[in-house]
Image (cartoon, chains in turn cyan, blue):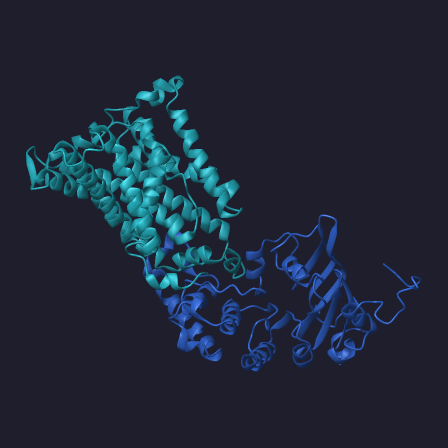
Length: 323
Length: 281
C-alpha cells in the first residue's frame, strides 16, 4: 500500500509530468487564450525531440541543438499556419492532426534509418546534458521523491523550464498583446475592425505555443530514448485532457492538471494491480489493468467536464455567459 | 439644404461639395445574384449620412465591401484620397474608417475596460517582443485608460467597467461597441443598424451620441430601418434597392421620392396586376 502511494506521489515531480505541463502551457496559449484548435501538439514535441537528438548526435552543443529545435518549430508553425489561419478554426484542427501523423510516419520509416533511427528511434543524445550535471553522484530527496544525481538534474532543469514558461505566458497574457489575443478568441472580426492584424497575431500565438511544445519534447526525451511511437495522437489528447482538467484559459491549470493526471494514472494502476493480486478484484486480469485504468481516467474526465467544465483553476464566472 | 451638401441636383450618384468617400462601379455577386451594383456614390465629409433600403437591398454587403470585410467582384473606392480596393479590413480601420456590426460584437469574456483599451491604435505593448517588458508600455497604458475612462463616462458605462462585456444588456453592448470604435479616433465611423434591439429609453441617448460625433468633426454613415431616427438625425439619405442606389437627398425630400416608395412598397403597389405593360424588371 505504501508502495502504491509513493509511486503515485513520485509522479508529481517526474520529468514526464513536467514535459506534459510544458506542452499543455503551449496549448493553453493556442486554445485557451487565442482560440486556436491545435490537435497536433504532438508534432511540436516530435520536432523538439528529433531536432534536439539529431543535432546533439551530429556533434553540436546543447545550445545550438536547442536553437535548431526552435527554428524547426517556427518553420512548422509557418507550414501549418500560412494556409489555415485565414480560415475558420476547424481547418487548423484538421491540418494539425494530419500533420502530426504525417511527421510521425516520416520519422519512423526505415528509409530514414541513418537519420532518424527509423522505428527504433534515437538514443545516447543526452550525454552532453548529463555531462554538465552540477550535482555530485549520490542519493537525493526523501520518501516518495528519492532519486540519483541524474534524476535530480533533469528534474531541476525540467521544472525550472516549467516555471519560466508559466511566468512568461502569464506576463504575455496580461500585456496589451495578450488583450489582442484574447480578443481574437472572442471575435476575430471585432478585433479586425479595430485595426489589428489578426492573421499576424494568430501566427505569433501559434509560434509561441508551438515553441513551448518543442521545449516539452526536449524535456520529454532527456531521460529516455526518442521513439516515434511516443508521438502518436494519444500524446496530443493526453495534453488536451490535462489542459481541460486544469482549466484552458489559465496558466497554473496545465501544471496542476499534469500532476493530477499522472498521479491519478499511477494510483489507479497501483490500486487495481494490488486488488487483482490480493484476490479482491476477480473479474479482470493483471494485463487488462493498463486499459482499464485509462477507462477510469476517461470516466473521471467526463464527470469533470460535466460538473466543472471550466477546469479546476478556471473562472466559474466565465461560464455564466455563452458568448 | 441640398445645396450645402450636393453639387447641383440631388439624384442617385450626384457629386458632393466635399466628399470623404467616393465609390465607383462596386459590384458584388453571390453566385447568380448581384447583391451590390453601385455605379457611383459620394459620402459627404463631416455629415451624418443614412443608408436606407428594404431588406436584402445590399446595405450591409456594401458596408462590408467598403470596410474590407468582403471583396467585390469589381470596383474601386477612395477614402480621404486613398485608394481602398483590396486593402484588408484592419488597414482600413487604421486609415480612420471604423465600423460597428449589425449583430453586436462585444468581446464577451473581456471586461468592458479591456474592450475599450483594445480600440486604441499604435500600442507599443501589442508588439510581442515589447509585451514582456511592462516599462515599455506602462505609460501609454495609463493614457489609454484615461481616454477609455472619459469615453465610458460619456456613454454612461463607467459603473460597468470591470464587468465582463457579456453581462451588458443589448443596448449597453451597442453603446460599448460605439465607444470602443471611438477609441481608435476615427475620421469616419460606420454604424450598421445602431438602433437594432435597443430599448426606447436608450434610443434618445444613442441619437445624441451620434449627433455628438458630428460635432466632433467625424463623418458618420449608418444603416438603419428606423425612419424616425433617419429623419431625426441624418443630413443626407442614400436609398438602396436591389443592390443599386435609387435615390439620394435630404431626409424630408427623399421620403417623398417615388423611387423610394417603390423600393419599399413595390413598384406595382398601385397598378393593376392584369396589365403587364409597365413591368420594367
